[in-house]
Structures are given as structure tokens and as C-alpha cells.
Length: 153
Image (cartoon, rainbow, N blue to C red):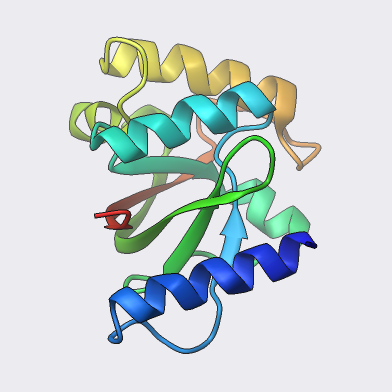
């Protein structure tokens, strides 16, 4: 079974449980940049700990990918590329790195959930894994996204 087939079949199972979900298969993606990141962050989502994520706006600009929109669904993949969850974006805000809030850092659910920890983790991540050659800067625009877990509920 190909990845796209697995994603489509997963979406069909989700829609069978919730007919209010749109017919079109949403984008499927994994959190983080490694298998371990994907699995660990997915588990935080499934546990209800992670209800937010942050992305580099520079990465979106570099890749040409559209920014997430409120009400949009995403299929979340595990580290092996298997579909495991559906989330719905509930809010999107773009702020400079230095203006990400304590509340958002806590919603991301990583490490001790403090802003200091969030800054350390995300600076390192964007220095190592940014798609954009700009990488990291203290004033870089960060897309702070909040979401809710739709499936598994």
C-alpha cells in the first residue's frame, strides 16, 4: 500500500466516524524533522498535552507552501509515515520569535513547557533543520498555530 493510499483510506475511516469532515483529503505531515521527533510529538498530541505548534514563516516562504488556516484539517503522520491522527487548526498568529508567549510554549507540550525551554528547543531546531537559508534569527517571524485533536478522539 502506498503512502497516499494509506492516507486516503485513513481519511475515509475518519469520515465514516464523523460525516461532518470534508470530503477532500487534507494535507498529511509529521511534526519535527526526524523519526524520533515525529513519534514523540505525535504522542504528545495523542495524550492531549500538545495543542500547539510553531513554524518558521521563512520556511513557508522558501517552500511556497500555503500557511495553515483556521478550520483546516491535517492528517498527522508518525515517524514511519503512517497516518495516526487528525487535527483541526483553531488559531494562527504570526509573531517575532522573541514575542512567542508563555501560553503558546506551554501549549506545545515539550520538555518542561516553559518559554525558556521552548526558545532553546526551537532555536536549535531552526538552526539545524530550517528549509530556508535564513535559518534562525531572534526577530524571525514565527507562525504560532493552535489546534484540537479530532481523531482519535
